Image (cartoon, rainbow, N blue to C red; front, side, top):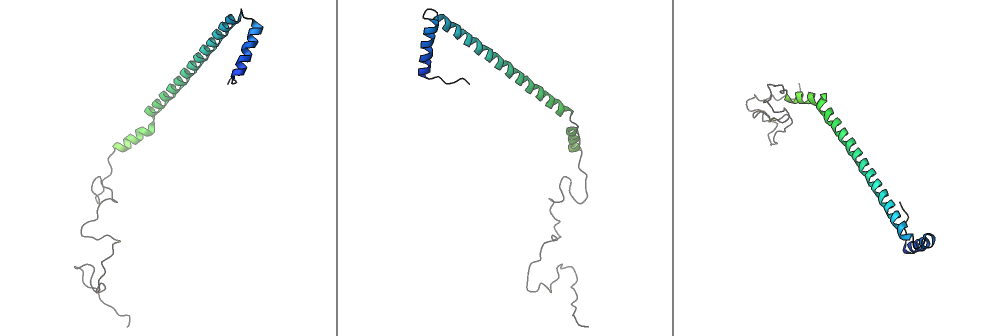
Length: 140
């Protein structure tokens, strides 16, 4: 980066150029310096544009390789084939429903469900169709 020039530095350089170059050749020298700076800026812009074009081309080449890899990717083909094959049908579940999400049959209570508490809970059978359980005493 170029150093920052203040007003006093520019004034000092102008007076120095006027003394060294002379008043007659100073406008000619200023034009030459201006053209030289313009040429340098043009070269820098051309270099930057060429560099940007190379970067863009490299990015396009990388994208082409990625697209080609995706087209030839065997895992995607396997995944597609796996998605398209039907799921095996199990007789306990309905087609398309997973066992974890299917509701329990209407007559059977869930395995971990507790029976409602009542005063005669120990005397009443859990299933009304089942015969009552025999009461046993701990003695002989």
